[in-house]
Amino acid sequence: MTIHIGAEPGQIAETVLMPGDPYRARWAAEKFLDAPKLVNEVRGMLGFTGTYKGNPVTIQGSGMGMPSFSIYANELIRDYGAKTLIRIGSCGGMQEHVKVRDVILAMTTTSVSTPSSTILRDVNFAPCADWSLLSAAAKAAKSLDVATHIGGIYSSDTFYDERPDLNEQMVRHGILGVEMEAAELYILAARHKVRALGIMTVSDHLITGEALPSSEREQSFGDMVEVALEAAFT
Image (cartoon, rainbow, N blue to C red; front, side):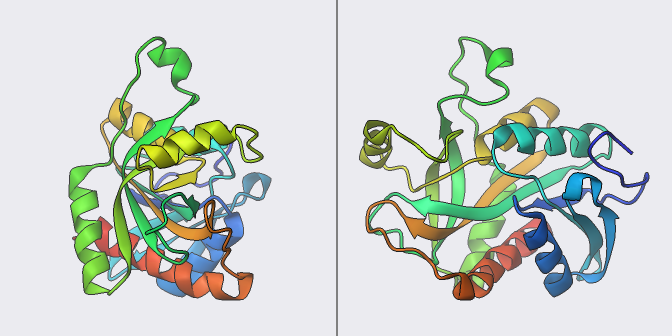
């Protein structure tokens, strides 16, 4: 066990799905996994391990933002041997053709800073998804008839952003959506030579102002989780 994950050796699968919300981790585990077992509840950051079509899977909450995400991803990789990490979460749409409820597969991530910035120093490192996961997720989304977009996203370390000019440049340069974790995931995956992918459901839209009602979020998020699970084991 580690400082932030109380699972015993062997209780974490090599494939880990990482929603920000620990309660969403519980919902996804109970809905999609067979025989899910609670393996972590340190600081209320719930983690569950079960199987999907016979394959071991852990669904572990990561908290909000890259600093929190980095803690859990580092421990999962270095201490528990995770080999495939897929972020599943919500994002804000940044292009008019990207609609609320659509799913975004993040090919690349743009950021102002990440917890890894002090390591990379002056280098503008270009983190990207694992191609095998990305292509498998695209195929899974198509077979499941899920409206999907593939391209670059923006990982922001500020939720209450007071830089509208920065968002305008993201839109101008074709960024599909904004969230808060994927850039650090991709950098850690490159550093530790593991597979990573960010799959996000558009829950609100920065241009249109539309937002997904809470009563409809579970069904829409379910599409994203199913795409992630199918991609992990294709």
